[in-house]
Length: 206
Image 1: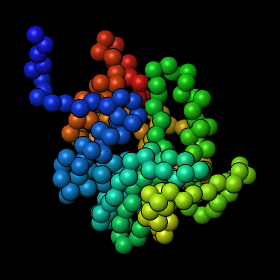
Image 2 (image 1 turned 45 degrees about the vertical axis):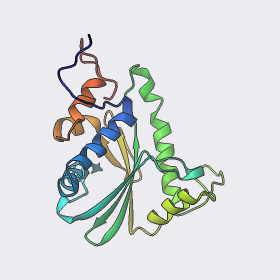
Image 3 (image 1 turned 90 degrees about the vertical axis):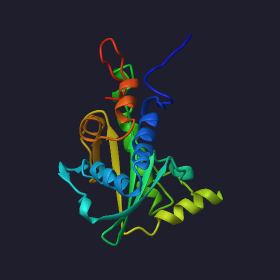
């Protein structure tokens, strides 16, 4: 007879999508005030050119959208809309993990940089830097999301990565390792553990 004495019910997520869900739904489990405080802790881990850019005392409220669509401009992994001392700030996140096969990570670097550029293009143009005409389209839900972000006072583009890389354009950098070591969120440790082997602690996240 199968028995599991550790949990009555437990939810585990695989790879980057599972980890993102664990982070943000875990925050939500804490309730609005504690969840927002935990989000502020995450924001303070973001570095732009090596410097912290967000001050938790200035965050009034936040809305988090996981993997919304921007049609031809791509699908951000996460978008956070902040009321930041009265300013509307929109943060686009593109997340990458190490993957099980280490040599696959380097091949993804140019891909995530291309994605961040496209998100940047979406808020101000209809033509990307690669010369291809891109459109938001006519999908009602996409347009609804676009209206939520287009009038922001400031835009930030954040790379959530397994290790430090050189970033241009004042993009932000957030590391998976910092999240695991510095944030305490319900279910987060279990999800990091699920994505590494028990025998040799080999992770497919970072």
